[in-house]
Length: 498
Ligand code: NAD
View 1 (cartoon, protein in one colour):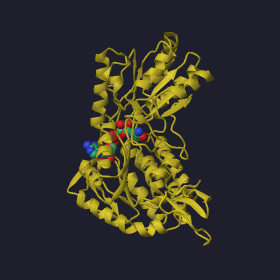
View 2 (cartoon, rainbow, N blue to C red):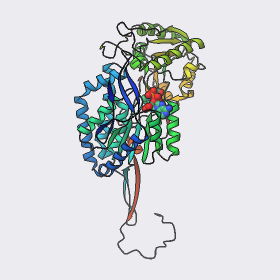
View 3 (cartoon, rainbow, N blue to C red):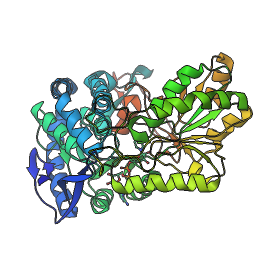
View 4 (tube, helix red, strand yellow):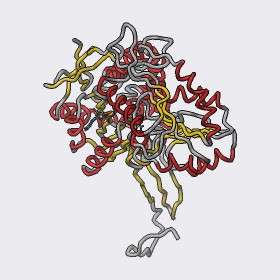
């Protein structure tokens, strides 16, 4: 059986008494074992990162950017293999796995422009002979802890910007699909990154706690479920670290009576069921405004959902593949039962789906509920599976209230041809990322990404300019070069520029 090792100081590092199973979700079989590291293993990674830091921080930004350019070219040259490896551990279909890699690469492209992003501000003549300027400096050794659902994109969101800014990095990827993150670290080395600048450690809570408590780790970026995100934020900040922690989601798609329903059905099918619903920006709740819209949408949705093809991740015709493991499959199925018990109308039931020749795979057919109520627990909580819940709203104001009052606030979309309604909605909805006729409004890499409420703990978003802010500290310099002519200044009064 293949073992997945840590990657420390540019080399594989085999340590860890405990191991975790890595499945091939399409077959339901264990395909590899990942080592679960301890605090001692983390110490080795931190030591490597600490040692690499002064040299890397002193490397000029253009040279750091060159490594990013090389890495981008290497990832592009290896994208087919990376996508296959990713799909084999995650279960998403290969085309979607390529998208996972590609979205991460877009952040690397942003990081290629780091010399520009790191330029500070300068005011000449802020006072007599006085200039004020600022410089962004790296924090030191920093860490990222990532979820299973984007094993390429989310690590690249984090280490791309952090490393370009001059930090050295420790990545703790999800133990469910850890191979691609290691492969990315190997490609960074091949791209010219000095050993120790990017290290990968594997493990579960024990390793995460060691990261949270390590005195030499200055900042932590986390993406995962909300309870863990809150825990990471509280414990990390209590230990004086800068922390951003992004959590779960329950994104709504509001469908106005004037929306193009064929377009909505097409968008919803992809956004609700793509990647088996295992996306934090999936659209698992649809809110048609008015019963007429709801009935018309339902009539079009049913055949579209029934026509979805579920298959193994290498099936080029499959719309989506299996979910990540048996425990997650059981959890999703228990939510389907819960929603039915709560009084939702189970229009299409995806439980019991079996794929011929792959009967052990973790598959769930597409599931659709109508007449779901905002009081249902199955509506209030994240299901993270191929399950679409329809909540009917009588009017625009009630539709606006649903995502605004939901505990999660990651993404939301409105489908309409009415510019005024869209504008009102975007301005008033209490959610971090809004799509207008865009079902999955993940902002591009040079903007920033981040949800609100229980979807995001901390104040600074991921990637783009906010990423640069998160991974650097801002130094402010006030300088005076006196010409010797000034006399009689009262040094005991606070200086002003007046
Ligand atoms: P998860 O919270 O189970 O795991 C995330 C990371 O935390 C992993 O590295 C894991 O090893 C670690 N972890 C798990 N349990 C822990 C514990 N008790 N103590 C400390 N660390 C622990 O999340 P997941 O199932 O891998 O990913 C899916 C979740 O991530 C969903 O809730 C999804 O919405 C969310 N997500 C959010 C975003 C976003 O940007 N908001 C993006 C992607 C995924």
